[in-house]
Length: 182
Image (cartoon, rainbow, N blue to C red; front, side, top):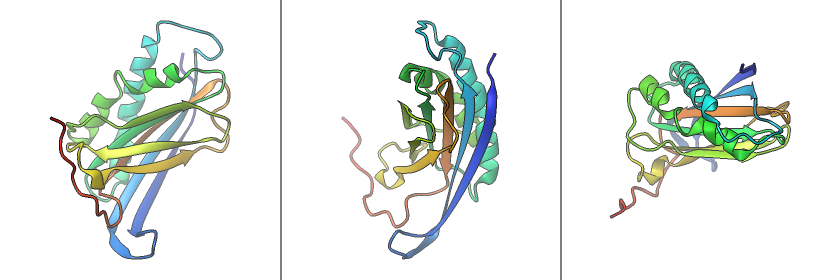
């Protein structure tokens, strides 16, 4: 049985770049859910029960995030910070096999792979949640990062699962679109 200790939502409204130059408003939102890691402390080959957990949490969190945005979602991403008694594969099992589909459903589509990041970290550690365009993977102007943390998580036997959305590019993007692979 999965234990959810808490859920945190964050919203950033960006109105200027790092140099203070005004820009069109960009809203970035993220949800972080702190869950117990049922596999902390021991090796388990079958991590498939975490696939469904990722799908359920991803869909529920994204429903809330969509309402927090100022405009339709253009970018998405996911991340997992695993407590020190867990393994990186525990976070991968939450993120990769099944979380993307309910996120795409909640935002009305998405052709690109969801950028992701996962790592084992300490209590109060941070994780960089990557963001990328939901339909154009080679739109470099939409590649962004949100650094997230929960001060009292993850405990050694927990995972912080994160989902993020954005309704725009970085402030004043100037990189453009790269060549698609051949």
